Length: 172
Image 1 (cartoon, rainbow, N blue to C red):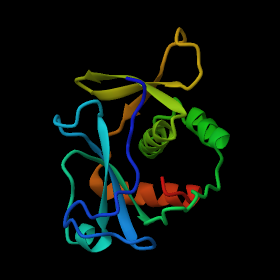
Image 2 (image 1 turned 45 degrees about the vertical axis):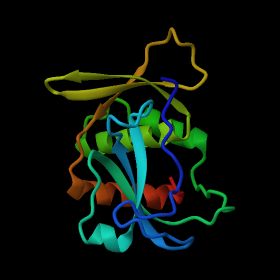
Image 3 (image 1 turned 120 degrees about the vertical axis):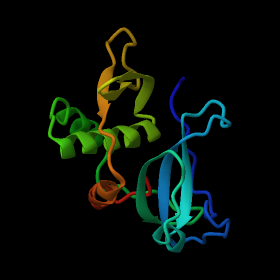
Image 4 (image 1 turned 180 degrees about the vertical axis):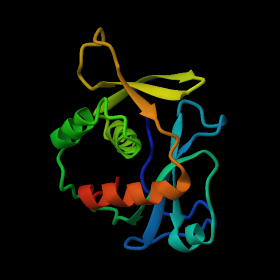
């Protein structure tokens, strides 16, 4: 696999099918892809805030974030550049505090989406799973970077996503 294709804003609610207009508040999700979606391990699904607040949730939910539906020609805005994101990701390596592990995992997802990291494989053990990734352009003989999937509870996901959103100011 040469990386993840997570898709872009879908312009319709995954729960109701109703259209979502530019400027509407939405909840974007990252989910494990059903087996019927070949070639992808993760997919993006967008939800109208009303549907999300009413309890609509996709199967295989990994993370979600609240954002605003972009205009078709809107350029993404970032307060943190790519090099800074990679530096923060590196700084969190080895930090075993649960919230820091969760931030690092979410940053890994963002860096994968931005194609700054390349997915190598997933290692599953009785204790959980680790994603092995490599920085783009790195020599493939260098061992991959291990990122523990902290199995974030849905209750904690919103807070983490809001914190990252405050820092990054992006559509993700």
